[in-house]
Length: 198
Image 1 (cartoon, helix red, strand yellow):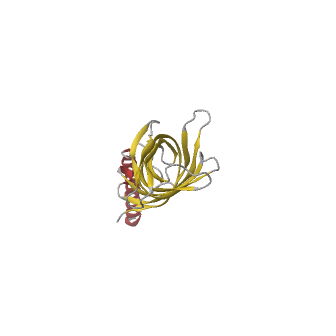
Image 2 (spheres, helix red, strand yellow):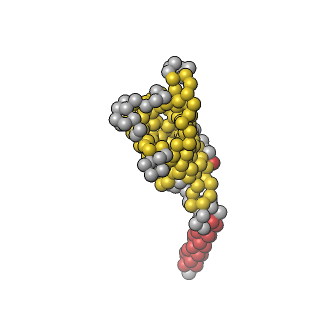
Image 3 (cartoon, rainbow, N blue to C red):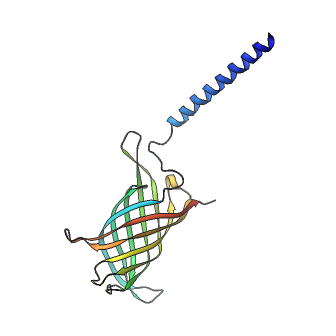
């Protein structure tokens, strides 16, 4: 008889413990971030659509001695895994594109402030991805107005991605929109290596 009562008492305490743990977990989850975070650490693909805001300033690169366009800049939107605004400023050599040849992207910087969808359906600032341009090329077509662009980017983060560091690749196209006559840069940003700094 005592054994039955003891087993019943242990079962009751175990059940109460499980219910308490479940309620505590719900309470913790309800105090989580107001936006839905992407799966850790960072989803790999972001689509970029930008337009030219500056054709840069012409100067001489002190390292190479080549005439370079500094601050050839674009501003636009990022969609996909990390939605937000996107800015890119690059240094290009030669200054005037040579049809059928490639220009070197010799440096520059980029930023991606990220705005995630909130639980209530709005948006909330989640932090920023940013960095420098490690290297890149713009391979021009025969007209010298359109190019295939590839860049390797250094990556760092703030807020949600504080302490993360790594690399990303950008592949896209630079072209003149025939309707608006604006120079556009569209493409895909893929985070290939991104991990916390230990």
